[in-house]
Image 1 (cartoon, rainbow, N blue to C red):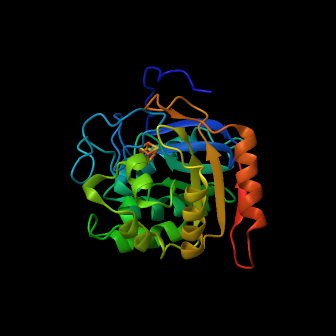
Image 2 (image 1 turned 90 degrees about the vertical axis):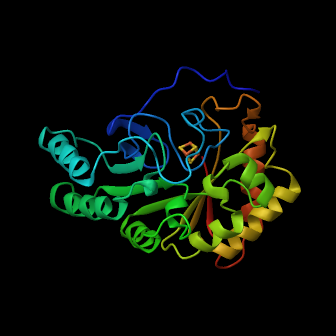
Length: 267
Ligand code: SF4
């Protein structure tokens, strides 16, 4: 069933929430991408809509909060008693966290702040992984190391067939799936999240599922989160997958698992 057409865009401030996350519990959002929607992907299912401008040939064009501002804002939030029942800080928001030029410094600062002021809180990153691609980012190795300091580096991988992946994600700079996979393969620990869609692009066909399984085997993540749309997409021709079909995909992946396969969690 189609979701309603896309509503007026909601933008994330630097800190947003806390929200109750199905995956992470009570979670504070940290948006490194500024007030506008700009991302190195331009996903057709993005609930924040399409990018404000055509996918830029590089990083975001808007002013971004610098590392000092990010850490000082979070420090002030903690000092004001904001932590309460928050168990997770998630970097996500209006765009791609690893596109931020100071991503490594921000992660290092967040880890220090967490250890000092909020021990036990998990640090999660929802990322499209584009900051890991050396051709786009001369600091790709530092981004990889920074992701390794976090508790849950969650890389978005929504299709295993190159054409489907490109049509769905619309990556900047002509990045190919092969190029992306080479960059993602070195991330450890590694969590993948796959958001299935139907409609104008159907990633639930047998061919698509087989291609995804091949890519999982290549990347060897610890865990794969399986999701579908739960908010209106940028493109109204992209549809959510019925719950029964999602459950069947989860059962198939689990049944096909061999020793060393990831665990599959359905959300
Ligand atoms: S990577 Fe995330 S923020 Fe960027 S376009 Fe895709 S869904 Fe939206």
